[in-house]
Image 1: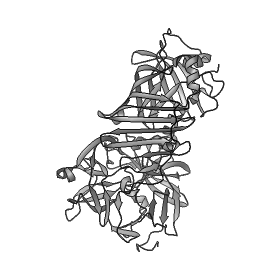
Image 2: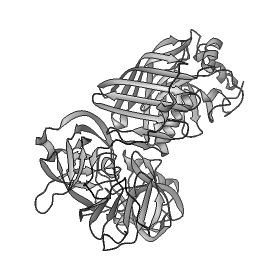
Image 3: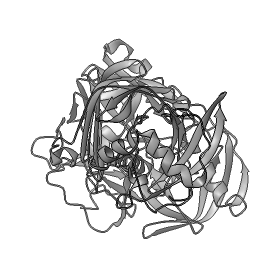
Image 4: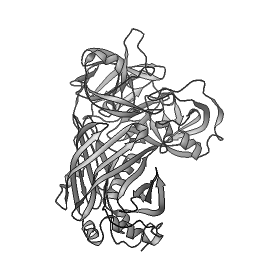
Length: 547
């Protein structure tokens, strides 16, 4: 046997866990054993008993594939799910509810997802870690030397909400810690707590049944109270060790085309109004409503302002919590027939619908503020933002060759938002690049405190106004950083904002900060989502100078 705080030694059995986004389906066994206090060396025995003893161990040890399906609900929106796993490190999860469908998958190398509008993208950061953590749990890696790395530790008998549990800590892939709560009499894994960045999820498992000698909970309900998110998986069918097509796990190479590019053109120039730190383009929704939309790379989807589209009778197809600067708000999901920007057309997209009053402004000639254009617009085309000329140049992705003369900075996607590595005063961190941030460089509270930056920044003083966005407004401080470096670019004496930690993105424990327009406007910037590149060009008053 191994000690409870060891990360790798001998193995005698496995515990199966099927982890889903926002919830967990845990494969455990009920025992009629008395309550006991395992010593450090008995953790293996506890886990062995939790799946049904030696015979169940042999079944789990030879598990090569698993498929399951059943009913799914998200905040009372009902649908279906299906999941597939192939050892040692592949997983696929699809959920559908109403007209909506979402996919997350990992092929052993690449983590990816399909969003509500059918677009495929690689994921990274804590999103990728969460998917890989699912693989770790499903592969029983915490009980096999030849599988994925990680650690585990028995923390003793603990009380939670008046009930006693055996508490086991797991560190899949030596990353974030999961806490497993086992019933002291049956060893069933009845509860699990986990965190994705600053969001805690508690999963409750019930209705345990036998499948090939192992006992699985057929009902799993997860609650992320901070986000107002409740999901439930009710298993109907489980099939083990039957063939699964390997192509299911691979990121598809062909994207859905849901737009029309101007005929005969390889680029299209859209004028914008750069006002009060926001980039506004004029668009029409369903050919009926002319509105001003903010270009917002910090938005993982297009979001329409409720007051501007009230009389368009857009079909509501669901709802999801949205995360903003200060916290979470529930957004209706509506289907649009078209969003037209000049001669550029987006067809049949799903967008969020929220009250965005206070974020944007109507034009001087009375065109109302109508919402934001996020990932579902920006990711469709390479596009260049020229602040000096107030032009957005959109390129045909089939014919695109990036202009020369710029400085390239690779980015990954965090919740569909471009994220770059950067250094502030010599301290490295991950920063989102947010065209919807009308301010400048925001530093997140957890990162500032972790690196004791408050005492190193210059000219620190309270903010004179509240910072706004989706979620509650936030107070904070402003200051000056000596240096800020992104790729080959180096800026000196950079103004920064230090908002108080909220429940939204400013409370992130993974992201260092947010790069907004008051910093980005010092460049002409190309966004290329297909290649995962930002290219920074010198400021020019000639919109075609980067040809």
